[in-house]
Length: 482
Image (cartoon, rainbow, N blue to C red; front, side, top):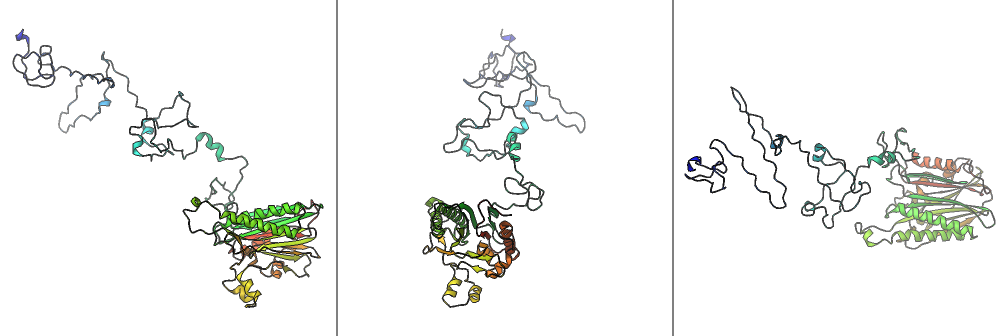
């Protein structure tokens, strides 16, 4: 029996040195009588760990080619995965499919995700190697360590995609009724961000240029050529008095640029004053008293803008209170009533060119105070660099609220011009304003307002420009501008 055991110097299995007469390897227990000395037995696969994946089938031996001849190179390098696998019977195994990409952790169902159990389309190997467009990968590194399908405490479970859903992008790109055309090239469509898709020109914002016509009353407001936003606002209205006669109203406000949020102040003041004025007139309140109450209500609305929570101002602790000026006019019952705070103005322009036009308001400004005190004449005062420093305004930091109101009863038809200093800086005197207004202003108030704004823009447009026109007397109910 001993003579049949091959005499080996080392174990064919583990290369452990052997002694003469060994029947089994002392290191791995290999049976030395089972294999002839010229053959190398296959290495037994290690036993799989409990709970681990099953051991892969042992691959058959490969007869590697060798290079020969002058200039020959070695065989091309191959990866283990390039070799076909075999099953236990020696047959070729089908190519292994690439492993699917790991799923992103999701806390709950997403509106655009497939239902549980629904088939999910597989990604190609190339797609699985590159980050998907529109998905953020800036989550903390420990999010995937030991968390499984859960999320890191305090971290969002998923991030919104920046790219639109292709199933809804087509519908969102062309909203029903959208016909906005670029103001620059007049050809391109304006996208949702306010830029032309053809030339890329930024389009005006809603308040950069506003026009409105309310019956026989009209107004136009423009950002001007030097300011980055329009801080003016206006509100128009017409109603019926208890006796059935018509009433026309116009409120124009100019935001104080040195204050915080002047555009919000002018918008709040104009809307509040107009609503209060129309409500009081409809109840039969005298127009002059109604104007006073409207200015007080507008002041309270602007004051409320300063009552912000501390958290809203923590990033800008040095902001001051929002502020604006106000001027308004009412045509009702044969009366012309004006009210104002600040340096916005109202002018009376008779339809008869031989009649004298009149400025109906006095500015709350440094220049007006100098003239009233007799320190300077009007030309000297308004030539001073301090001329437009206002001494009255609506806002929480105003010294005191002093609404000015005045009532007139013109004996002839005409037009009332209500405007900010962005216009009257280019037509300050009443005679200059009368020459600038078209003769058919009472019949075409919107066109006349456009002409006056054009006058300011042609003059340089250094400030926001807002103007409203009201005909006097008020046309019969139902009549409008031609």
